[in-house]
Length: 117
Length: 107
Image (cartoon, rainbow over the protein chains, first blue to last red):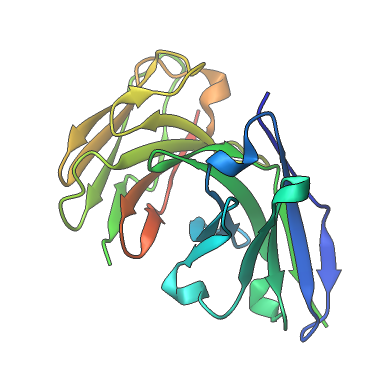
């Protein structure tokens, strides 16, 4: 059974750093791109970027380039999304997704990130 | 960037009704159009890929059609468990993947 299990909710202050995770199981981790999707409170879905675990090749939506870093650790089948300096506007639910064809066929349960002073 | 519009933004229908949602792309996207269902407090779920293909395990009352710039998503007979927000999503080489604004379906 394919599963994407994300780390738990986080509450941070502006300016702090954060790294959230997505542990994958049930298929060959190296075979599929894994990405991240943001959903701000009460809003729609925004694709942020993705990583290919085999070689850590990454691609970002232009608006997220330089704002976040996506990485992968093949040894533990885990993908990460990190910020070096959080802003209040980063408050959102973040989903990891498996890329299949040109769609997202499996989703993590979501990690709620709250940034507040 | 390719822009996606969805209509209506919300709708209310009765159990058993046929429900149709449309999604329009600002330029030709071939059949690179997918549909997702998001129930309150849950992660989205893929229902239809490549415009008209039903994802495994998804009930057959869901269907999709279209190509180019105009796409349609249909629930043939609305069920209480179909209360959700539905999103279309397109793929473009740059900037990648874009979702429509969503359609909230109520009973």
